[in-house]
Image (cartoon, rainbow, N blue to C red; front, top):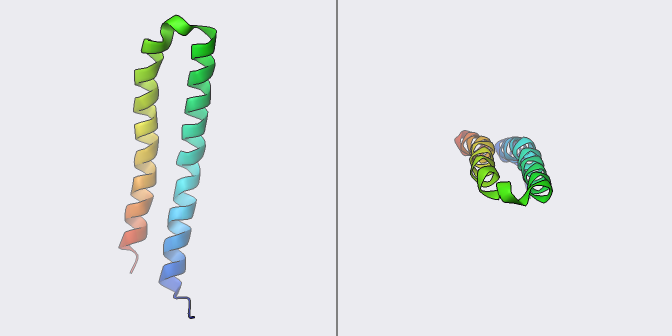
Amino acid sequence: MELDLSTLAKAIAIGVGAIGPGIGIGLIGAKAMEAIGRNPEATNKILVPMLLACAFAEAIAIYALVIAFSIK
């Protein structure tokens, strides 16, 4: 089985491109749960910004996926 260099480039692009968003989403979730644990009444004020931040972080992973698909 022959490994094409473009296949390797695609794998590296999506792998490296997913590291940052994965760490970011983990930190966002951890800090949100910590904040809710300290002040449960603020759940509604914390939830929406947390979801927006997760969406922005996930967009970076989608950009990496697009780049991986564009490699020929």
